[in-house]
Image (cartoon, rainbow, N blue to C red):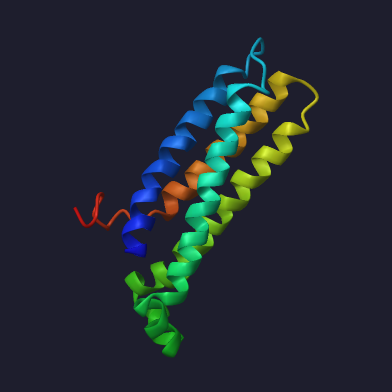
Length: 145
């Protein structure tokens, strides 16, 4: 059940990332207040990323795949599929979480709304790129349905 929830929540994260990116891009040229929709969209995106990461950490701790891999880490690292879930996926997603969190902090400290929007757009785009790189696309798109 935890894996199914983690797999489904990825779609919410991706949708919120696109919404946050579009809201930020809308204000890059100025004339749009950052404190409105862009800031809120970025906050929802960041919250969803944090929830997804927390579910992933819990899943990592209880996963039979992870437990078995930790028994012989050398052998696990030689298997590309196992290595992806034991090392690559968590590391890239952690970088995505850091980028999402930092984008909100850096954007809010901008001197004006256009700079805040630009910083938010860059941060969300970076975070989205990392998340897309770390998603296990070999898994079913809508598992357990």
